[in-house]
Length: 381
Image (cartoon, rainbow, N blue to C red; front, side, top):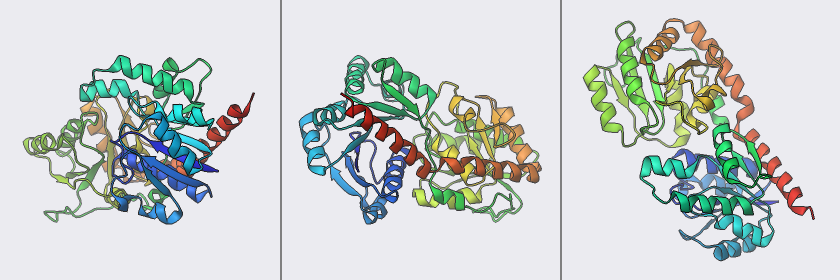
């Protein structure tokens, strides 16, 4: 069995550091380690060192031109010897599903977001009517879709044929996160001032509007009157300067690490006493990759109580949940973990155990099962 892992989105580089890149590589690795052959067909390979370890496992990488049409993709699939096609859904690009249908290859989409809504909200995208036509054409040619959340699955079902197969499989976690140190909430030294016995409140992810970083700063400012703490941010993005200004204005010690390679994230999580996963709105739809990684690393997590998060975190068992925009609630949750180390350690350990069944190896197996079912459906007369 050879899987073609197809990505026509130039904003998702195979060797990159963003969540979409991590997702692509994790799936390829899971399949390669399960004994499958995998060809990644991408329009943006990104830095080669990002997927060098996968090349050693046998990954084949083929680079397609941006805007590749159906015929070009069909030729690439035919010459690759692919038996199945698994494609990350991209905006305005139904050609992968159409090419697979042309070759009578089982094709399954992976859908991570309602892409037209996301592009309109964050990038000023104005071609939504045309995009919806492309999505419908792609879904009509495909055998089914994996959605990363119930919210995304609902969006797919609105656009796809009535008998279109959709299965919800949230994002997984790389096995290396389970090897992080046990959650024992030890004292630490601040990176600049050498101060000890502070609580390090951390965040890992892109500094973008859908992460409520202002609430992290505000809640930290409230807690700091009771417990000495420092905020540690691992990531970068357009909200960087706003974050720095807010921390300076509120007198919150902030260590901004910046973006780091994904393989270094477990080490940074191990430095954090509490991990924040904040969102400003209840209307979010994605499967939060960084939340799963923090839980797998055994970190006590404070997260916003929205749909995809509530399905991952059981309040007071595997984390603490707070309503969107509730700064005082965030502060109370931080203070509870900071002042009750035994509770924090117990929650962190429970979170890690909960995530053991959500490794990328497990997720890759579930996706493979769905692909094989699509194969059987395709073979029916």
